[in-house]
Length: 462
Ligand SMILES: Cc1cc2nc3c(=O)[nH]c(=O)nc-3n(C[C@H](O)[C@H](O)[C@H](O)COP(=O)(O)OP(=O)(O)OC[C@H]3O[C@@H](n4cnc5c(N)ncnc54)[C@H](O)[C@@H]3O)c2cc1C
Image (cartoon, rainbow, N blue to C red; front, side, top):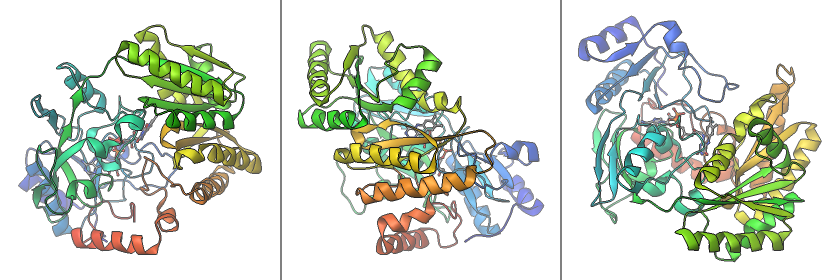
């Protein structure tokens, strides 16, 4: 593993080789690159932060880091929830904020070519202007970057219909650990030549290669969404409704869940008039054209009622549907108003959602803590948010104990310790229990083959 740190000699070499590069060396500037959104994880202060604008600059930086044996942390917008972009003491953070150009929107080939620093919402808006749609939509879409989405294989609210980020990637341009620049493919929809380096690199959290450009798949823009909210007397009945919707052959674009604690936090923040007594709420959205959407929601409503929903309500306008979706996106921040929040990210097969919800309740009771659960129920991906009193001296110990119980419960149900946020530095101890020693050995040999010096985001994932 690379163990050098940024030194005056390194800074001088960068200055000589890349005189136009923006490089932050002041401590106050570097401090703001210390953390991502996992403020509670141990981090290091970067030795310097580079803000390149071209692939050539990135490649030159990687070569210089190799010469000086300095680790590199690739960083997008820093909204990650696994410590993947947090600083490493004395290392070089390469932040992609200034590589923020959308290079081409190709309407014939239904794709967009973009630099990694573009914010997800800006890309969506740019392609929407020409009637196209880029599906991946993490709840953080207004702040996170395409590079970070690719780094984490981000999920979001419409994965249940359109898949994770990986499902919208045609190819990447990357800088490898030895400074080689390569393209993993082109604009082909079908391309099975050799191993899929694209899919190996997506989700590798900056540990295998640095992404400097991406060709992303687009779709014709679907209809504006219609929304149904369904309220349930028990978590189990909400879980049953998720299964019933799948069995009914429906394919809603969103199938999100909130528990009572989260419903109340969101309603306190937005005054939406939600049913505050309900044990759980499902948000179901359809993006089918007008009458087909109404029919999909009617069938979804029937599945909810047969699973035990006590009330349902539909958005009357597109603006109302947007407001409800925004409120769901802000669930994490609604909970943050109540204390210090640690967001988790477990996933289980969809049919096991009720079991996982029951396990979360059991774990909260066992540790006498508040947990608000919400998430992408249609994907079986839940975010139990641990809400602690600010300044609670037991916070670290409780967090560790609750996390361990949550992860074990997910694994016992055939699930995963992370559905979309990544192993990063937060969950490395749980990779082997989930994947097994043989799989981790294969991952290590891939890492060693591609990055023998251990330059790229060392200590993350593996
Ligand atoms: C309120 C809130 C809601 C969220 N909701 C969701 C959600 O619904 N779904 C979801 O998946 N995530 C969600 N997230 C987590 C986060 O927004 C995503 O993980 C997002 O993809 C991170 O993007 P970023 O630009 O902030 O990346 P960063 O946090 O900067 O980096 C993330 C990882 O990608 C790597 N990386 C960044 N750029 C590159 C590059 N150019 N080349 C190689 N590696 C790179 C980094 O090293 C790091 O490991 C949420 C976060 C918050 C705070």
